[in-house]
Amino acid sequence: MDNSLSAALPAATPAPQPIRTANDPAATAQSFEAVFVGQMVRIMMDTAPSDGPFSGGHGEEMFRGVLAEKMGDAIARRGGFGLAPAVLNQIIALQEGGA
Image 1 (cartoon, one colour):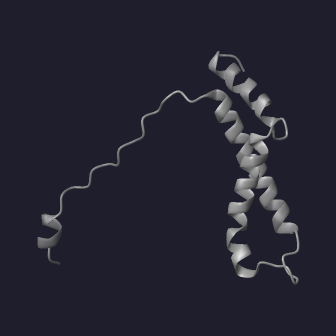
Image 2 (image 1 turned 180 degrees about the vertical axis):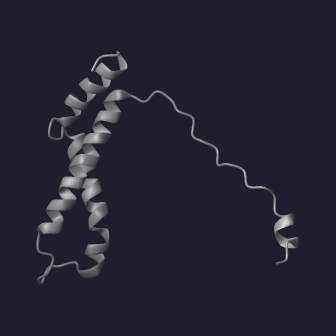
Image 3 (image 1 turned 30 degrees about the horizontal axis):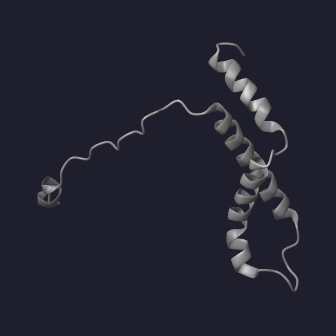
């Protein structure tokens, strides 16, 4: 085996880790609700028939996950299902040392 090529390569350095900063608990709770609602929408869309004269075909199938994610974001921004306030209360309780 020829080691001349591997000897010329620099040693791999670990990727820099992102700096952890204190996130806004309300934004975190809303983001959690958006992901949760998006997953529910995706499951709902998977059970809906996707054939027929107005079907988007393969293109619709490819972007269905993106649509579900964006719908989850939009629903959460407009108040969602009320999950974000409950999650926010738990985040605050955990930050204060309670459970």
